[in-house]
Length: 280
Length: 259
Image 1 (cartoon, each protein chain N blue to C red):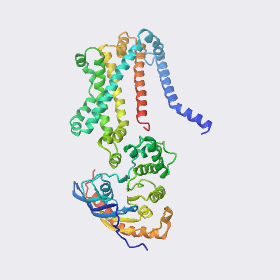
Image 2 (cartoon, chains in turn brown, blue; image 1 turned 45 degrees about the vertical axis):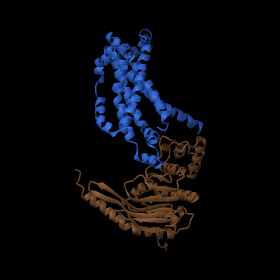
Image 3 (tube, rainbow over the protein chains, first blue to last red; image 1 turned 90 degrees about the vertical axis):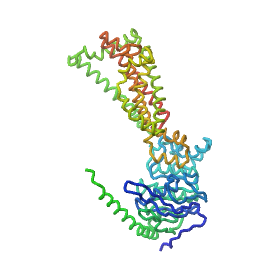
Image 4 (tube, helix red, strand yellow; image 1 turned 30 degrees about the vertical axis):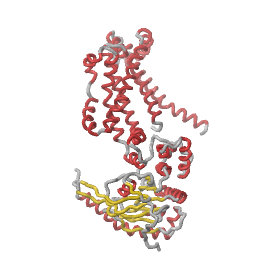
């Protein structure tokens, strides 16, 4: 049976404290995220999971420093942040490679920004390209690659900036299930190799259980913490773990938490459509 | 790759050009036949064979190359000016929203204005010289470049801007490393449109004010009712257009190899 959930706070590298985000809309103010507090330890893989519309991406923007009009504090290694911070590397849900740059130039982008000499940054970029398994594609353009390969380029580009925390917002959401599982393996392998602190925002239970040390389950609007689940599955892990009995139990446990929230979200969406005048 | 497949892919690359050329030849042959059988009036449309025959005459007797160089030079100056001022104008209007809100509508309205009819005003301002022609081409071609530059910059995907923010780019870095390269394809569409507008207005003004270039030659030949010569001169105008489009395509490939 899964272990009892814990909210471990020792040696936290990332702290989110009482985060509240409100938006003004035509129908009045909406609280997207309410009183979210959690901590992430160095080297930990934490996933935040919740139904669509629960404020996951809003939280991603707050932690990444892209959204500043919020209450509460986000700090990295004790330093409060209010704008994008060099310690946090972001991987976005949408395809975000630069189509006018080759794979190697995309990955070398953050190294170019710090003024690293060309030969040195090419060597570093090759290292990260190899890490994500794209050797031989250095001089290809993103338009010549598949969706999964492009997401790996984005991941390599973010890793090249050597962030303390890797922050990912549903990076595999647009990919098919098989590619998603295989890329999950790749991310796990990299995370274990680099001991990379990782925060993954997702709505995919399988993905979250496959990769995480802990999973934070969010409620539907306003998004707040419902529960934290410790995932005590052996490491190193691969996608083969999805067939294990323990994996199935974790998935069932998280789904039982999420089901009620997802149902609320669905009813809310239906009610919104019903109360919106028909266009014709 | 096998030798056979390499040969096939080489032939495949030539196919579009070959089909294009064959279509053109087929069109001219069809026009020739229609004229010879009296379906088309040869006093309105000269037979293509006569047009081809008149090339040597207009090259040797009408100094077409000097005129070609003059028109191409005017287009080049107008093209450089409209690229520099149009792109800078678009960037400024994108950067300063008040300027964009104040000016975008009338810039869009100017795009459809018949500038060629304003040649008397330009003659008064610049005199009867090449600058009148260049400025006519430049002013008439400016709106599409400005509008497409704004469109390209505004249309940059938000996620790319967010990537820039996540790497803490300064406003200048954000512009040169993300916004501008992302907008380049749309900016080039604007420059292409601008060059079409410029060439039409330059040749049209040469025709109207009877001052040098291919436009004046076309006017001269038309006055003499030398229809074959007129059409041959028009072919040189098309050649100017083709040369500029090839140069522009090379420039775009150089600036943004991935397209």
